[in-house]
Length: 386
Ligand SMILES: [Zn+2]
Image (cartoon, protein in one colour):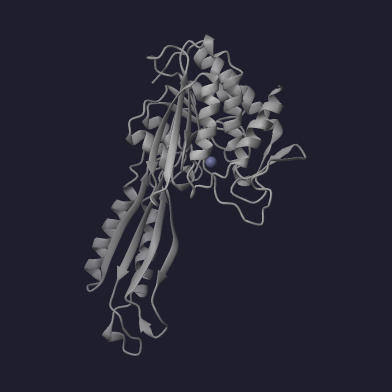
């Protein structure tokens, strides 16, 4: 079978399995485990229950190089997809048209999974000097929840990792973190005709949010990382709600505060600034109460541009390394001890939408590069640095 036939067949199988994040990913894990087992991988499942009590499974497969040696290379990809529009009738059918493969997950990130499977199956695994690891995770789209389970359960990692995401074959050596908090301003309800009877939580929130914007511009832009665009931690208030009726002084107003910290900055920096603002606000506006609920705190991550795995991908694609402003599983892989690069076929701007696709030539090149990476890191062995 040619590489293209093998990729088409694997990607067709994967797209046909509905692995929307809200569902259990057990079916797609079953498929991947049977593929890996056939190739001779030793597989381990790391299951957990998600917030809704649905069973989710991470799968780790290892092959070659002596049972006790640490894997040199891990190929990592998430199995879950974002939901698809019911009007997209071919979402679960791989469609080939104009040099592209279409289907939900075709780009994000089942193309990379099929490339990893085909690359591993065409490698003479008997000749591996050090083990190759394949990692398939759950719930990446919900905040790298599956990968965090691997860290929490201290699953051993590899020295180097290639984390599959649609990067248009550009090696991504770092990403900003992602943090989220909900803030609630509590005032006092009253009749709007008699302002003295209450304290408007919405007027209070307006002052708080304005002060927060100033902090974002002043404090968070002091620390810079020129490797990122924009080079500072960004801040956003994306949702706000409050009040019950037009003639009631609102007693409560809540809003979501998101910040994306540059790597190297404490991800709790945003939270510390919120706490400081809360103290100032409550001192200056007696009778108001500010409640802050921290919801997420993921630090950014990066490896140097001269890391061996970054250089390898850069040389083989002729693409200069870049960084992105959104979170990836590279963070968790690095917590597991790997120098991680994010890489894969397809464009992130074509993911998460009806008509998602991967260009077939990029998929073919990705498979070829993964095959060479396995040969370089696992067959010839590599010197680990840092
Ligand atoms: Zn993805």
